[in-house]
Length: 249
Image 1 (cartoon, helix red, strand yellow):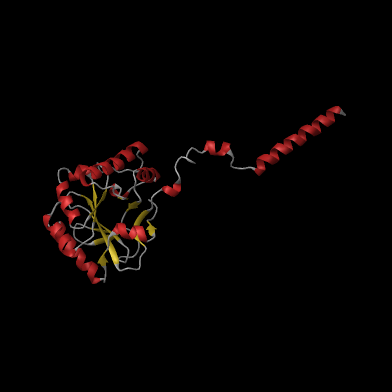
Image 2 (cartoon, rainbow, N blue to C red; image 1 turned 90 degrees about the horizontal axis):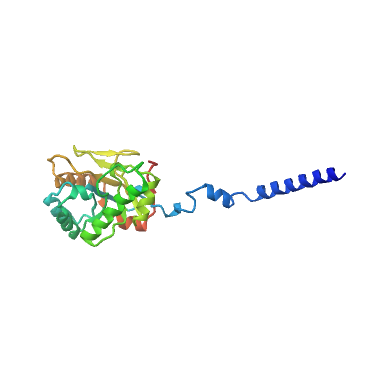
């Protein structure tokens, strides 16, 4: 009898323990097995955008690297009051920061495109953070600014990129829906061809010329205006308008 009672007591205890476990999933043990949880809040990660949701008839002109330093482009930006965004790479700009100071003085914004232009996806966090924060420090020392926008080289990134960008003070990672080819034609990364309100356009640095940067931009402006659009200031619209996330990279 005593043995039977002991067996029944053990069974009851086991059933009770099992019931507690079933009622309390996701306790401290689960969090301990998930090293990512609680380390970096995913809600802090900057959005990755290639266009802006807006009803205004605007598109956004963005320029990469900083290899081209066409003085006529400075004049075009000044004359047309173009609020273009320049995503600069320190190793590409080299001694040419004075040119971009002149561009900034006539209305261009200066943004981050890393120190050395590596493909970031797959690199460790420390390396990605060094590239992004390092260029933040360079641009702050050169211009007294802390850029809020970042473009990853080649448009490639991963979650580590977003973590590093957030930790460096970046509020949006900027890709593009349209890109200007060397022949002056627009290529579209996704969606139907043709510029639409809110599109972000990338104008890469040309390895050779002509046409010059000013000439390529003037041709692009004619296409923009033919579609009843104008150039908007990207950072202003990203602050006041919900961004449309780019397709997953």
